[in-house]
Length: 135
Image (cartoon, rainbow, N blue to C red; front, side, top):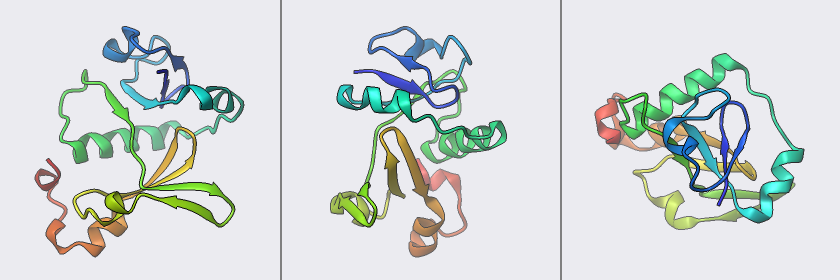
């Protein structure tokens, strides 16, 4: 199954050494998992995210996941709310009600919005945002 680089949107085939060594174009180690049937849709719809925002997102994800080494690849493959159309959603109730995970909204294939603030605000177990609690 293919993957997409989070930084430059390059499509990387399954089993490629780039998944372990980093994207050959931008050297990022963050990848979205992509289903074969959605590959063509992704190539047509590329959303540009400012470089400053990309770096902040990467830092936040590494902190939450407890990944300290910059050389470790991160592959994002999760969702709890899939937006299927205007006002239409598919819900993964198990993930939504699991308070150890943030809410994840799938905006389109390969694009997610993670509502970390709401999850932390609604769950007193996260207290003072100590990153160690996410490990």
